[in-house]
Length: 286
Image (cartoon, rainbow, N blue to C red; front, side):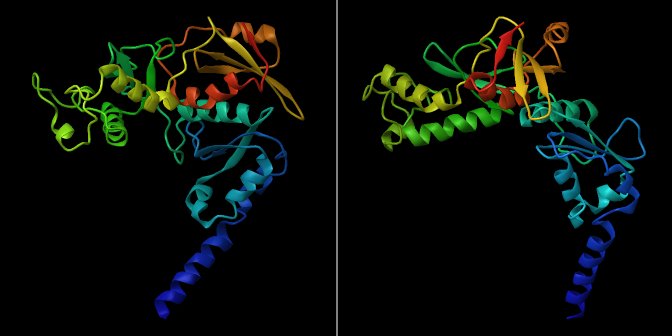
């Protein structure tokens, strides 16, 4: 009973002390009820504590003060800043860019993943390729984005189990000449390795299983301007080969943001692929 009472007292004390930190109150008065990105700053001028985004900046920032788990971060915070955006898409893009470049202490780090892999169908067989060696923005017949080669191979093993695919034809094990794979005897492989089905049938089933994660090639020759109209402002987001280059107010500024990005931005692709291709936003080539 004593331990339980002590635990409740500690939880109550944390909530009472950190729910509305007095030392941050002055920074909250101007928070707008609109989309944007906010930053909690500590003593360092170059290393922020936390960066987040919301469709309602005021509501989201205030929610931090009602969470005892935020006590450690709030205790170190000295001020709050924010950047309004036209809508949720602009907030997502800016948040990801700021987290990558500023590396705040309390965020999950978003770094360029040098091991990013995909599955490519070449000569009827899958192979795991790396973003270091293949331009994912331009290469057709890539399926899935994986943080490592191991993750890509695990996906192939899962698909083999789900669709009776042959480990040998998937490159997961070596096939002996004129012999079926071990899984074929167990009826876990449909038998493309021993003639029970054709190679084309096996490949068609593999591609159908992968189709939902096909990587979309960049459909324009160069950068584009995606226009996001909000209730209080309009922004032009400049995108080039799935890279977010920045947001501006007019087309002349947008053209000046053009540059040649390198590599493949996994996070940018995840955020931008559907909005760019959905037709929901106006998109103009630059």
